Picture 1 (cartoon, rainbow, N blue to C red):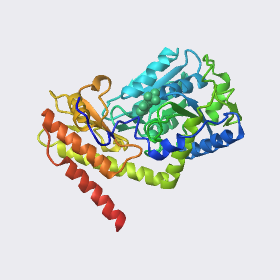
Picture 2 (cartoon, protein in one colour):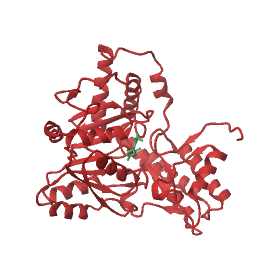
Picture 3 (cartoon, rainbow, N blue to C red):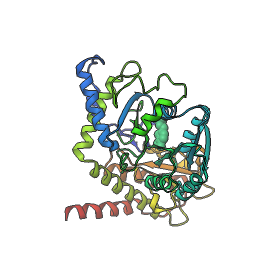
Picture 4 (cartoon, rainbow, N blue to C red):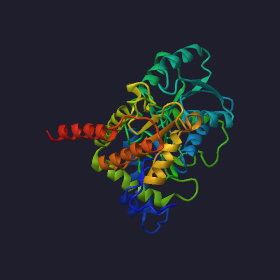
Length: 398
Ligand SMILES: *Cc1c(COP(=O)(O)O)cnc(C)c1O
């Protein structure tokens, strides 16, 4: 393959770009993970994570991918054979449901249109029909990274409330946390699953679970076998006091820097930046949609994701060819279509450490790749994105 110079543009919807500041923060010698210096860093990080999760409750960290935190969440609050209602509308929500089945839970999958996401009315109807209160937990993925559909957490919360159902409400925020609004306590979420390599701008390999008081009560009678994931030996009250084995010390150096960066910018500004970049991406796709071109996979503006956009290519064309060419020719890394969306969509991640010119460069490469591959599209996607970003910048300057 030809040598390509210049920086890679990394637009995967996870992992995301790791800022140099975070890489530098991790470039230091190790600390005793039982010593006071590391303890202080871990405590500060836990407090910072609580501000990002918007919770006063317990937050636990592990050396694990998001899949590990998925498992930790299930095994700590449930018992073998417990019924859980999994709201499936994509590859990741389907994956969490499948994992529950592997672990011995009785998983009822409530599927909805992948282009529209979870249907709160259907959730309410199903919960209201569960008169015996057999359903112990409802599983929701906040942002379906495979589809670019952001589920409305509050609507699902209201469905539980209207059905007056006591099930635990468990939400995966792996690709929404620190990218757009999530409020664990205000939205009364019982178990939250987060990961390091998306909005938090860290390498992959660390994950987090937060647990409400109700979830911590469930821990006491949960009977799922658990060792590495067991919260009980890790917690002193509602604070994490230990790790299952050696703590991931260098991750905490990075996490501390990531939290500092988020606080310097301000979470609301972080969300506004993600919204602005997402809107520009959507403006580009709308321009490309001319001439029977590709379209946004998300079919309802109320569920547009501010962290990832899935682009559905026209029937008879190969999304993977666009993705491959963008990478091989222009060194722009896009997300692939997952599961049944393989070859049908490519995904443009726009979360984490990203600004306007980085996004515009990536969109330009996508537009060139569609041209070279022969996917029909309208011209001027990049210009439409520039117009969208210019309007925001003008407003900010006024
Ligand atoms: C990335 C992702 C996961 C999986 O995280 P891993 O760290 O790869 O295990 C789960 N859920 C969602 C919504 C994701 O975006």
